[in-house]
Image (cartoon, rainbow, N blue to C red; front, side, top):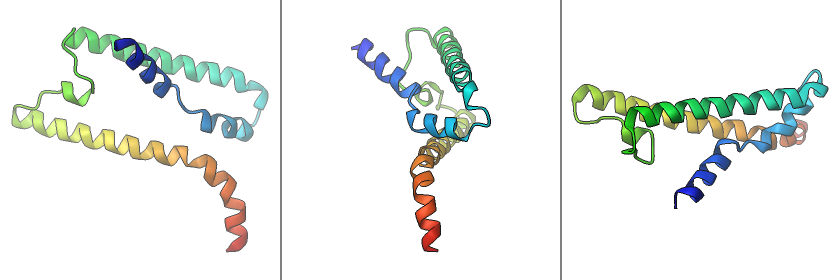
Length: 116
């Protein structure tokens, strides 16, 4: 069951097709688009690989499904850090919803501004 979970995480990590075409449309030089995409995807691949390797080296085989579940929560200081980390994750998820809403808003802005 580890292979389907891996592919699900990989698809989630590289998901973002909704902002790819608007990014190309807003570029000053769209002919450099392929270079920007390769650089961006390459950077994401390196970051995921580095953090995955560091996480494996730090926790070994005994790893839980989420990063926040691997944080110690037994002492008071660790509990505060754990809750702050969960708040940061919640904020990051909230911001990604705003980024994904950029594409529909780009289509809806002209008719909405014409109504106002």
